[in-house]
Image (tube, rainbow, N blue to C red):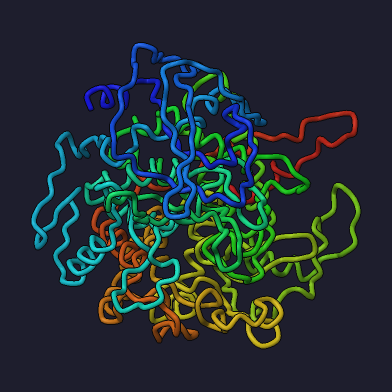
Length: 635
């Protein structure tokens, strides 16, 4: 154990990874099996083994261990176990556009020796020079935040009851923990996106162990997993969720395994685009709040970041700097007409890029990646701010658009037809205020207001300061529509009648003003609170928190609310939804201690729009409208 503790603190932290058999060729072994027969599960090792640490070097270019892999059949499930030997071998390089191969040769062959349940070392959370110490349930006080009300006490009890353990250590929280639910489906799993508010609640309370465990174990699961018909997504994909399962061994013994879901079991069979982005965002938050940056400096963590970025920054056929994704690839994980370039993904993408720029260690191989991040951030910010912004002035401009323009200087660059402007928008948009479009594609603007994308655009500074202020002005002006009886609508307005049938495929769960189709989600409360604190609108956040506090406990912490004003509990809403509970607690703590919230958002980067990839060349493509845009909207 002392050796493992030493190894955990060394610069060359050997990550251990349980690899799927689909990756055997990556390690230099021949692949002569049918991958469809096997199911990879992450196993909790019960035995310690000795390591020859004399051969461990602190160079990031070393290859510390060769892995001898063998198969074992347990309960008709094939699992791969990897045991290290002290002999060296150079593993096969991972090719990538931004020189990730060196670190990947180290971290992708092993991933988590120091993240076994019994070996994880957690640095005590230090606040103001003192180690945070837990106090009694009836008078909790961490980081200056006090939980005194009965609602908060109940919320903390429910959040603790939702904690999932693996090998005796906490690794996350289940999506919902209703004991009366006879068909939990996948709500008994740990979702990456769902765990984020839980993680922030624990961090703000001074409990960092569960967050560190979660980050490391989900990193172990980052893989290339079979989804539909043996198709493998790119390296770096994070699972949507995982579940701790207990499998029987011989002699009446059992062991725990982590069983990830990369979308192959999801209702729509769609891989989650946002999981990796949320993971990077949470990694940064962990370091900011705890002050422990050793986790993000680990070589396996650094490699995980690079693999996610390589997946997101890969060149493709798309001309836009925004990420092109399918329907159901984010929080709205059902068919809702958000395929293309949904705002939520772009805002999370922006945040993940800014996080990565802070976190990535300065090495020779990271220079190209950082340069790519800066270029993409610049292009993404300009694109969203210039083309996705909607206010009264912009709507009037679109209303008078000329179409079929062909030139570099075209005003209507995406050939948007004025007839696309919905009739509800004309009367709905206020004189003062605006928002960012839900989606932008050729000849298509989705004018629906998507709350998460707009709130996270404020948090990440994807929007300009002026735009961020206007978004909150619009929410305040349209409070009854967006907040109503329970904040906040996931989108506004709902799809109805023939539009609902065509776009959702007559989805019986996404009926008008329910679930993803205009339903109200209390978990959005913490992101609204964070956005308000950033923009100096604390009173607006307090109003929303107070509104939610009056109903959530009485209604048994539902997943979502139905109707145009969010008056009724959702018809298929899960009760005791964990991210509803955690979102409320996180909001309460941020309202009571706004200084802590400042660690979780990004200020405006005034240098981004100065970075332009439109360099002068012989074709004459040196004209760029960024200067004009900067002068108009950056103030």
